[in-house]
Image 1 (cartoon, rainbow, N blue to C red):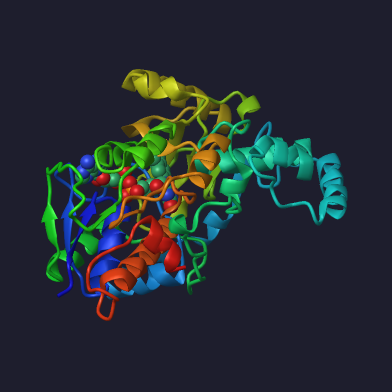
Image 2 (cartoon, rainbow, N blue to C red):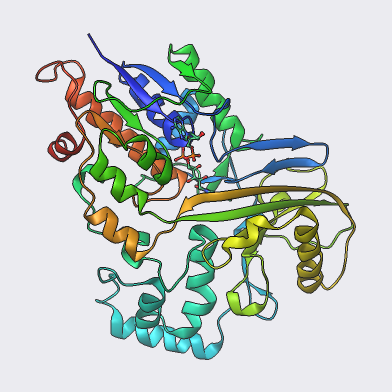
Length: 424
Ligand SMILES: Cc1cc2nc3c(=O)[nH]c(=O)nc-3n(C[C@H](O)[C@H](O)[C@H](O)COP(=O)(O)OP(=O)(O)OC[C@H]3O[C@@H](n4cnc5c(N)ncnc54)[C@H](O)[C@@H]3O)c2cc1C
């Protein structure tokens, strides 16, 4: 008989893992500490339009499109105007490099053609200066990665970010295959629609959800741990002290998102958003032009300002009034005028994301295997975005099937470090 698999955590990682396990014919039990599915992902519907509290979309892939077709969740691509992305250098620019930067960049590429691969434990700043030169590092690479990883460029690991770190096979993730849609996608009603679609599909397929439930890990249960690094460290404390200690060392970053709605005559720039290099004097890391990104995000004009990360950890302690004041000042600088705000929604995420540092590279490349019958899925395993988490969930579900699905050697569950290695 197929064993029941416990999935711990009902964020995107847990729901995606439960989906693939269900597809392989396993009975799945999903344990979630809070009273809702989604974890960091949540969409609020207000009279002025949608608010995404964290992810506003995910990169399209063949696997995502197949899953969404199966669970009857439609996906939309970004609007045409969202193909424009800006970086601030005195003003918002699509190409923030000067002629000298471009000439230097092309010379360096010619010289460095065979040395692009990051060295082990090389930081993003060091890699950028070695390969791209100062202009492209300061005004392209660091702001672009800051928008995704929110990290300290002098500590971010180039190998982890470019997927070249020497992580053990049991942390393996496939590279997503391209889908029909290109770039960032989202369900029309926001990311919560994807979460709700997965949850409803799983319930109909017989998965058991246990909300408001916090259970200690036990060695007897075949289990996939789909938590943040810090929560996984805590959860595995008793049965896997070695891996738990390693995961406990992973530094977590705090972020805040502030979505502001404005009337139809407010200043706006059409595009995906604008990133702010550190030396341009903005406290925000960047702003997303929500109503320009996807259809149907209004009726009002909406922008999401993003704060925090490694170089501004204290920002999550700011009051609502302080955030409002900062946005008024930064918007005045950005657009050169002031607009009356209709509504503001602030979300503070203390310890939300893993810091992709060279220390994390060291932790992952030396991570002890998880205890037998336990596998890990999460955004700290070398891939931070949702499209890559989906790939990892599929790999782990395949490992579980190989170990204890029909035709497995003993019919008994046995995976984790050893099994993962064997199944690659
Ligand atoms: C501001 C922000 C913007 C982002 N934007 C994007 C984006 O545009 N695109 C993109 O691809 N990614 C984006 N991300 C990253 C992405 O949202 C996350 O990596 C992803 O949602 C993490 O999902 P998860 O399921 O691994 O973790 P989580 O969402 O943290 O879910 C973990 C779940 O486990 C539960 N839990 C914790 N402890 C226990 C326990 N002991 N027992 C049971 N349950 C437990 C939690 O309550 C939670 O529901 C963004 C993140 C942030 C913070």
